[in-house]
Amino acid sequence: MADLVLTVFTSLDGYIERPGGVFAPPPWSDEVEQAWSRAALSRAKHLLYGRVNFLFNKGFWSPAETDPSSVAAGISYAETMNALPKTVVSRTLTGDPGWNGRIAGPDLPAEVARLKREVTGGDIFAFSGAGLANSLFAADLVDEFWLMVTSELFGDGKRLFTAGRPAARMTLIDSRALDVGSVMMRYRRDRTD
Image (cartoon, rainbow, N blue to C red):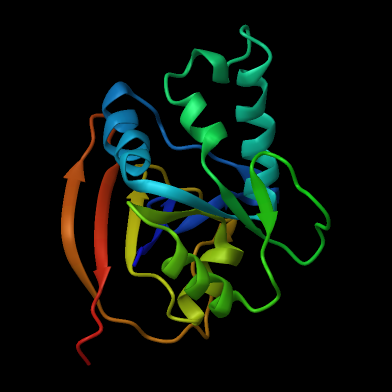
């Protein structure tokens, strides 16, 4: 049975987006690529996205298949990103979303339970924004949580976690300071209570 691993990065003050909904990628380096992206892709056998992140990533990675001059084509794991099967959680997308994707059914817990049963040889990695992250935590579907905290204070924006989410106990399984000043932490959901 596969685990659901949620990966998210935030500013030091807990924002996932800058004011005005501006995407703020984490500072990048070879070490970050190895510890974050390559580590995730070495375990991932299925990707779970919210609509916004799916469309953003599809727009970034898909050109690697047809345009050798695209930014994505120069990234060694572009082929893996394009080949992995994906599920998109969306209330507005319909039909075939492309990029090896399918639209999730309306029952998120049932969808994740099905993926956990069907995915073999690795895990399900959710690359999400605050909406999907909060939905996954609210339904207690996350088995492992990867959090990268960057060394910036945004001062405002969209918070990663919203009020009203149920409490959950997490156990730290790894932490690592990265060469760009960010800290990566991995937590496992503690279900002993």
